[in-house]
Length: 227
Image 1 (spheres, rainbow, N blue to C red):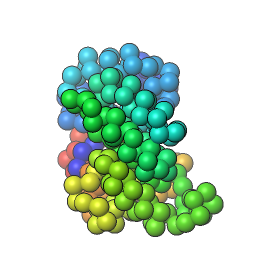
Image 2 (cartoon, rainbow, N blue to C red; image 1 turned 90 degrees about the vertical axis):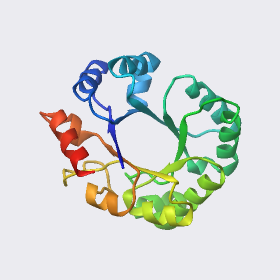
Image 3 (cartoon, helix red, strand yellow; image 1 turned 90 degrees about the horizontal axis):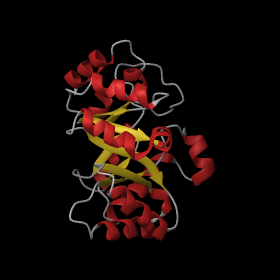
């Protein structure tokens, strides 16, 4: 299991300071909508200057027509990031188109697909997708696997079932982890480290419990000790 730290602070300066604090740890960094729209690819370059070994997950959740998604994926591949994601609900054709385009590259980033956002509870999800989370998340994961992607973004609660229906090597990445039972905030389907381990999660994403701490470095060390 790998730790991915969400850089969701309110300025590039604060995020870079956090990256400097944790530069000696073997961790991934998640750069999402807010940071990337505000700070752009220069911010990604600054992270690599702090530690060239940082692995970067660009969390933009592509969702568009197949050709537009594939064009965007090729642009992302020029940014020297290690992983990015799309929405599984964009459909199998779109996901296949992305992977076919990326297959022309000598080296490509890992590609994951979002199944069900962890901010959804079952009722909210059903209003939109007309199915239960557990059923639809697994179906989205099967579509993703068949389309040739590397894994999915899901809650910990779906991870084991997804691997059972795809492959144990198929990556599951879980956002909204509260490692030691911290406040859940706007997340609905959250888990701690113990549950993530039990469900065979490959990547846990931790944000607020780290960056809102008075001693982020100590929290990161504690998490890594536990995983």
